[in-house]
Image 1 (cartoon, one colour):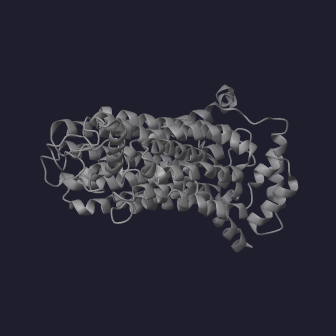
Image 2 (spheres, one colour):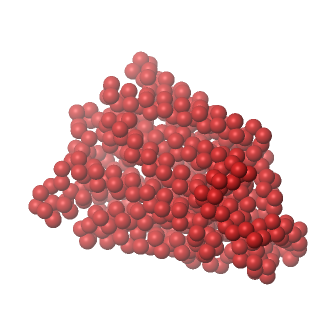
Image 3 (tube, one colour):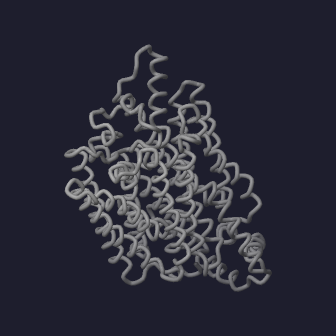
Length: 511
């Protein structure tokens, strides 16, 4: 019986994850490899239409729009996720969500032949919508399908699939695979593969029992799904718990996002959700990825090997989220969050010092390189996974979809603001001056950079740190200092809001 339960639950985790948060991490990562190819394609397309080349600043503007449309689409998807989860159910919402994936893959695949960079922009927007929907519904679906004693660990697998998507995107984007100048449309269109895998596997698995009973009122379907998930006919105790929650929710309609802020009884939960969802993007993890290439180069890593070192950063996050998934039920949510943000604060401080003194001591670049790996490991061990399961555990069935809408909207908005604001903090946007100090930050001067060894081949293409002295180094120090301040602030907020062990799986009756 235990084997049957574990097998079905494992299949649900894989089927939901491969087309869910895996797509988010994968599409966040693969866009970095074809940066220069897409910029060159944009200029060539414009020149073919008008007979004149597109100015450099306009090429970079189009590129920044291509990058920024992904989090904008994610915001739209996060707002759609709540109504979809209520009207279609958790499983069917994930299946319908693949419509965006298929459409985007077709746009990517035919964009080069059609001579349209607008198709790439629309595809990125649609992939953002898909990621926004799946990032909200997947942990909801998994949390409601898992047994109580495994709920935290199962919901944490969403973070594992995100990290796995990042690593796979970095691997597939290698110039030896799909990162070359001729095959970049296939690289972007490869998002179709996870979507097809989900469309084939997920229909064979049950819907969330809690949704079937509480939202649909279908006791027989709930019982059948629960028996299949648990691998036993005796699910009386769990059915009684769900019926108690169903009775408590009787006559109450699904909450809307603004109603959560109006309910005084939910004030602490909503405040905690807002703080931690914002912290996830503002803590500086994405900007650390932006520094990785140039820091590795300064530490003496050969240019042709930097692309493999970048894969190591994604592998660190994957390893850390896996460890967090294993230990979360033993050490608790609060410990992982406090420990993760505290370690991030420590490593960000050391990173800042290393950047300031990198020209004074020859071993400082090596220390900065070590801090990158340590910072990412600290992020993965706590904040990366625990934040995503808060809405499942802090809110009941009627408020959960709205809570995920609030959480998702905040995360995507912060990601968009970080992407827009980072170039203003770091003057050398997309600058390869760390490799060629006299070059200007235009796509033309970057054409000789190899696909993955160029610093702009990091996870966040909006900005990198250069090796040249004053402006770039100063910008690195400023942004690193911002990360320290953010991590300290949010660590304090966590202590403030969770000092009474608010993060408890037993907080909401029946959950």
